[in-house]
Image (cartoon, rainbow, N blue to C red; front, side, top):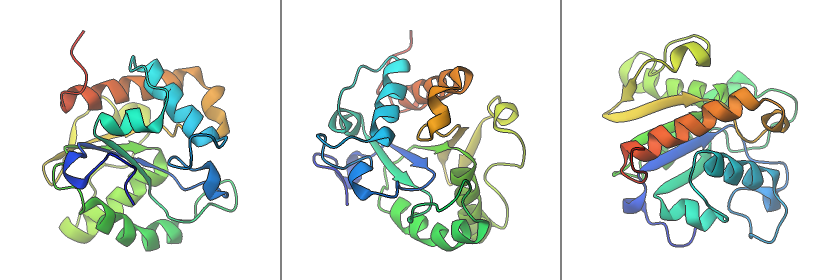
Length: 186
């Protein structure tokens, strides 16, 4: 279900994160009055990218839709590869709703693996090659005519600790927003 004010045809960027929080009330699109580290980190990421937002509605107004690669909360420190493969079909159906999407922003390894699963099913090869995200970032990737940007996860607790990854996320958000004309060049 899309957040209020965002329609399928307005989505230009799909930001794919890892997994939903254990409590749905802490998700990206839970009521703004609910405490949510997912939402707080995401808002912080946009602000650090130079996009002053206070609510998820303001992010939606930029043409950004945020979802997760897997549709059930993770139970340990990592998401099982079998779950990524299983849930890739649901993500594929979700992405098909957005014919005007121009950018897939992949927030972390789980999102990269999920899009690669979709790409392998459709084309027989990965959209993003194997390798460390910091090495891959210097390259441009596309999948079915859409720009694909591998980045780091902004929802975990380590996001607040790792300043260098926060800077990378901010750069990648700026790139995605510039590509769709939602942010002007400096």
